[in-house]
Amino acid sequence: MRPSYISLLLHMGNILSCCSRLVKGAPVVTAKSNAPDDVPDFVIKYAPLLYLHSQDKYLPSDIGAQITNTTPRQEFAGLTGAPSPLTLENLDQLNTQGKNGTNIFLTSNDDITKNPTWIMGVAPNAEGKTEGATTCAVIVADKGNGTTDAFYMYFYAYNWGGTVNIINMNLGNHVGDWEHTMVRFKDGVPQAVWLSAHSGGQAYKYSVLHKDKAGIRPVVYSSNGSHANYAITGTHNHDNPEFNLPIEGFVNDHTDTGPLWDPIQSAYWYSWKAPVAAVKKIASPPTPTPAATASPTSFDGTSVSSPASNESSISTAATNPTSVSTTSVNAVLPLERTTRVTSLWGTFTPYDASTPIGYLYYVGRWGDFRYPISDPRQQQLFGAAWKYDSGPTGPGDKKLDRKDIWPPGSKNDELLTKLVP
Image (cartoon, rainbow, N blue to C red; front, top):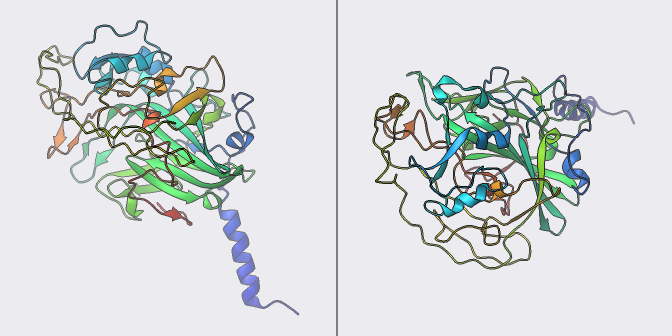
């Protein structure tokens, strides 16, 4: 029996749909990675590739260089007793400082408005490798019952926040920027991918994302300056990313097929386990304010007043998706020092003994404290948005214990089956 024209058209449509998941001129990549032998093969095989924006000045950065080019401060105040030299291995010793480390900021040694070289990052070479710079941390979380979440953490020394349309005002810049994608596997087969974007992101079925030439590795697009991750090129509404709107907002992200970055060629590799013992629920203490004895000084030498903190809630690992029972923790600041043994973020184990680990337990910020409005570099919009804001927390604060593809509390709690802005 001859097939009908309708069935032929449907068959052709299915073929075109499959082909559309390969990027036009899909990247051809090598199988190279610097992963130690014990890393699960599927974590390497299905690792995401990133297209950086062609105009992005602030490229992936060496994680350790952030320590070299900054000085830890308690908001604006200097510290005594900090380890010297400070390294990625001993960074968690700063958890003894200030309010148990949570109001410690890795503060730039340079005026960032002058674009010092170190905040510009490292351009990937022709094979996608950031030569001489370890720019990624891969964290493999075995959730039990054949489920594994692989977190690919991407580091940039600087985040450019974008420009508000109409008033042409630049807001949302900060030193330090951690973004990530997470691939969820079932018995070694990829099922879904989380793309982080600002304080939220998008969850997709693995099958619908663009792939490399081999049709295996998902392709992600990093936005210009802000490094939010998206599934397609184009303009993305920064204001309401949870709505996946195909219209521009007051602030927008932009993606294209600029330089190709293959993060797993220059990465640190870890396994992760959730806290084993039940943890006590901690009440939220007041929002931190700068030390009264500190008089911050701007780069022109004038004394400035201190702003209120924009410290966001520092979430801690609370719910283990495996059979281990833990108690939910809702904390802004831990009341006791976080150590590698007591960390509510879980336990990180490097796959290679030479790999630094302390920085994953560091609970402070990876950039400057938000500049006060009295600082001549600072601008603000209605007291709600700032030109220079505080740096972010690190990889441990990315809700590694999540049950769903998306972090708990995410506004985007839907598994998308088609590509959207």
